[in-house]
Image (cartoon, rainbow over all chains, first blue to last red; front, side, top):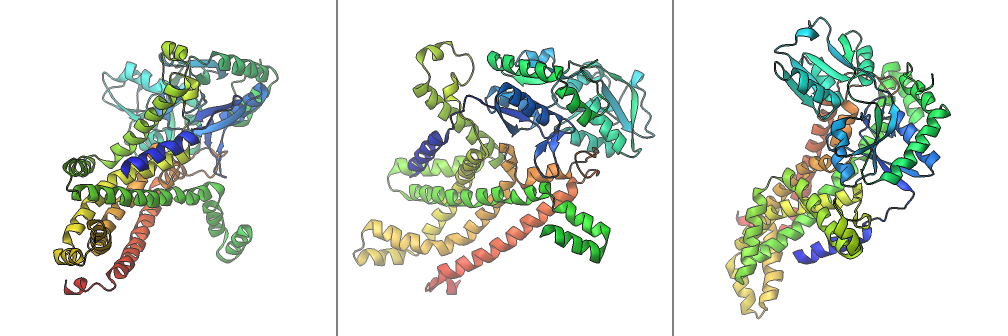
Amino acid sequence: MKRLVLSAVLAVSMLAAPVMASDTIRLGTEGAYAPYNYFDDSGKIAGYEIDLGNAICKKAGLTCEWVVNEWDSIIPNLIAGNYDGIMAGMSITDERKKTINFSDEYYPVAPSLYAAAAGHKVDLSALKGKKIGVQGATVQAAFAEQHYAADNTILSFETFDQSVADLMAGNIDVLLADGDPLTSVVEGSKGALVFVGDGVAIGGGVAIGLRKKDVELAKKLNSALAALKSDGTVDKLIKKYFEKGPFYSK
Amino acid sequence: MLESVITQITQWLGEDAGASLAYITNGKHMAWYASVRYTLIAAVGGAVCAVLFGLTGAALKQSSFLPFKWIGDFYTTIVRGVPDVLFILFFPLAFEKTVEFVLARFTCSSESLAVATGWPPCDAAQWYLRTGDYLTMACVSLGIVYGAFAANVIHGAMQAVPKGQLEAASAYGFTPKQVFWRFRVRQMWIYALPGLSNVWMLLLKATSLLSLLQIADIVQWAGRLGSANYFPGVGLVHPDWRWKYYFVLFLFFILMTMLSERFFEMLQRRASRGMALVESN
């Protein structure tokens, strides 16, 4: 009986195993990193990367399909083949280059910023015995681990939202995060949160993460991206989602 | 239809009530309400699998052929000891790898197998898992885990069927198979139902783990909706509201528990019809 059920399940799933059409690519994103990617009011995935990804696919003559995946397993699941590319605000780093390939960048390097609760004194030049929050598996996490781990406690969170919630709740002294999402948080916090010190530039620009073996796909996407950069589409989308830029056209 | 209701509410109760209603009925919230279907499918599918696994397990434990009995005992002992979280993570991954292994055997050319460094060895052996696939596997995982509990309950219930009934049936000339199905199994339900209702409650609670399999279920949507939003372009700007959304889930699960209790009471009444034994308890 048990064997029968198992083999029936096996048979059904073999039939169901979809054969990927050659011109469809699946893009993985997180859906929790506004304005890069998020769920809009209609409950659909939206954001800078969604618009840009769709534009790239259109230019390259591909059909895009979006897959929402948690951040901390987003690279393993790319390698496992659950999708073919990652567009999730992921910066180019040497560490990541060991496992995956990157397309050309589609968002320039933005400084990472520090935020703390208003009135909470934090001296960045002499951080000692503090609780520093980061999102796990990010460039900021690696940076904090390298520079602050000896004298401070590093707390890493699964999502960006959780790190902000814990900063609000006073569970961490200072939060180090990507500048763009953090700016929207600090501006929207109505004075509850403030920036501390100057930002630091960590990692490279934001790019599409790809499997190392998919060289053809990388070429295709890069030429589409280059075309969109030169015809101003990319800048128009940056303007729409980030307002202040930085832009690619001089 | 919805808009006119919102306008009405705004007229009666003011702007705030109207705005709140509009907010909790926007597409994002509708997606949350709709995601209840995954929970319900997983619960019902898991329960069906659990009963099948439970009956099989109990029959194996009951068997007089020793290897079968060992398999049954092994199943209930081992699987009951593994946390459900672990099983829901382990089973789909292991199953996916197995399917891909089999696919690779049949579809990959020997040259590509020889040079393959990653997994799967060739693209044709790649199995893309979608929500439906994950949901099916979640049902089977839940079925295997809670089937082990159900097997124990059913096994105990089979033992509780009065020996006299079975002996009388044999004496009337029923074959052992008929005695098993028409007397033991038919009568064991009244003893098994209270225990099975317990297993059902556990299974229902375990459906909150679906988000581990990248299924956008009610728990995942509650987290998404409740997360603080400071970006006006995304929607309503609000601080961390996750506790409110998780509280709604509390109420949902309590409601489901209450309905389940009613349902099992009804089943118990049905199963007890014409059974003299229950009255004496």
